[in-house]
Length: 334
Image (spheres, rainbow, N blue to C red):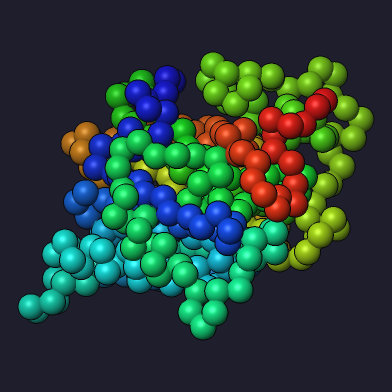
């Protein structure tokens, strides 16, 4: 498999991404805007999720498509971000038609970044609705990663986290893209080194080109987690996996499940009781290809590999900022 031309989620035709953040707050929002409604699903495997409008994404429920999905910092306060994105889309006349009204369908998920060195004294109302509106208004094909959008205040157990993305094109010619705000309870690198767990899936040197350490350190499987080092609950990796294939809601859900394998390949440990690990899946159908079963297997494998790469790229691209509690990957020495 090869990456798409941008190595971004937006290599999947029909998707745009917008970021908005507040540097003093050390938090932000990322909006994925579907240029036309996309088939969507979700899979939650973490034990502490925070979500909006995820029930409607189950295959047995009525609404088939969504207008956008939102990833936000701010813990439960960040769920307001979807209202801002919804407002921006309503101004554009977007949404599910109900009589004379249109209701933009905007599922959302949040991560915990309240205790990260940022100023959270925002007064009566949190800023996330306005950040969501700004993110939707900035949606485009090229966007910042690392310390940006929903990844602005993200932390791993021992390094700054961030916003990451990656893409690939399958042998069938289908495009798969991933977008992730990486803020796990665990680590994305091996035993305190600069070597990423996701190294076997790296294409070129997109996150340093270091491969795995050789030999592996004796402490490779030791747990380095925020729960022991800092605060319980200050976690969660939230993501979007997307394709230009034509999928049903049930197939989109299976794609989201497969993408969680990328979490397990890139984070140690993943899916803990203190993470709200979640993957949204989007199928834009722009390739006009309905994949047969054997091609769908390839698509699911691509989803896992692309997600692992996106997680590593999130941490690799993080940049230092005033008040940081943890160093960036670029400042680490083996």
